[in-house]
Length: 390
Ligand SMILES: Nc1ncnc2c1ncn2[C@@H]1O[C@H](COP(=O)(O)OP(=O)(O)OP(=O)(O)O)[C@@H](O)[C@H]1O
Ligand SMILES: [Mg+2]
Image (tube, rainbow, N blue to C red; front, side, top):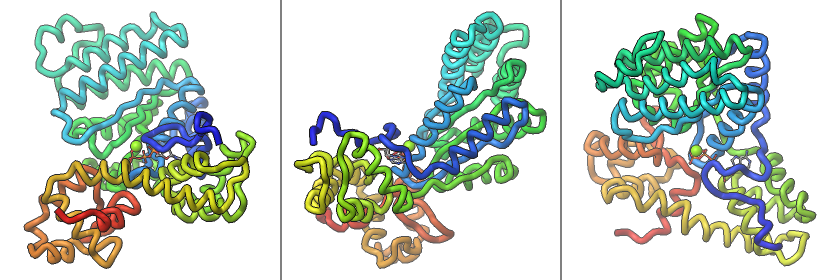
């Protein structure tokens, strides 16, 4: 088929041609938005799951829905080891100021929202900028420099304006496990206060499987504060639709065997579905994709994964981290005990706990249960086993 028309999109947060298998989360969010119009406020949402399962895609989809429904939406992507609270503060303040400006233009509310934009700018400059604070000082006072107070003041002011308008303020945070812990703590307390005081403010977060425990470690009430949802691979039926719908839309089709083979090879894993979908489209000579095409596509898709997806996770870690990753890959279990991994390296568990922690922070491995460790992407072990030893 013509590669120029290929609808499949392996990548990060790229909108897939068919977003399948997320009905429950989308309905739950629809309800949150619908109820907010009647000033009935539910809890925010946390989406957690492994790499490449479609968290960013879903988060963007929810945020677009909220925006279409008239919400003020702000997006933020946290990064590991971000340089301190003032940097993330600045980023949040800048996003807020820009989001408010967009919102005020769209809804022709310039006058009503101007003071909020200045307040957001003041939040950006809140830390240690003495005179700048004074200049920006407004009716509500300048940023205090205390992130909890400043954030609460800002969210309260924005929420009040949104409530008056019968809408809400959604903060959509991706890679939330990497958020600076001071800012995270401040956000959790503000969200907590918001629900007690019926402010229309909602944090919608996405992140790795350790995100719920990162939140619970930061604030004990975080467990009750959000509706939690695990984002996993698609069921075979949804995976089949993710491949079939875009192909049908372009006048093509799959033979049942071809479709079954690709669904099976992908394990329902969204990133792999896009990669195999792209490959089968490119190899198919006619508009009916048959089993031969599917076999070729699996080969081609694996090659693409081996050249991009896996190496980006294998080449960045340090030598020591890679030795640890190889020990996991060589273990008999998919999620071996950390003690077994350490023993295979000839060291004690504590001797490699720093490596384990840094790999978790980088999002390359996670702990599916206490004392066990596993890769955050399927197929990583096989890939590592195919790599020459250094
Ligand atoms: N529900 C879905 N159906 C089909 N394809 C999907 C779905 N969700 C996401 N995808 C596709 O899967 C790929 C990965 O999606 P995305 O970047 O959202 O994953 P992620 O969980 O955010 O990954 P990471 O943890 O690496 O940030 C993208 O190519 C996207 O188009
Ligand atoms: Mg993502």
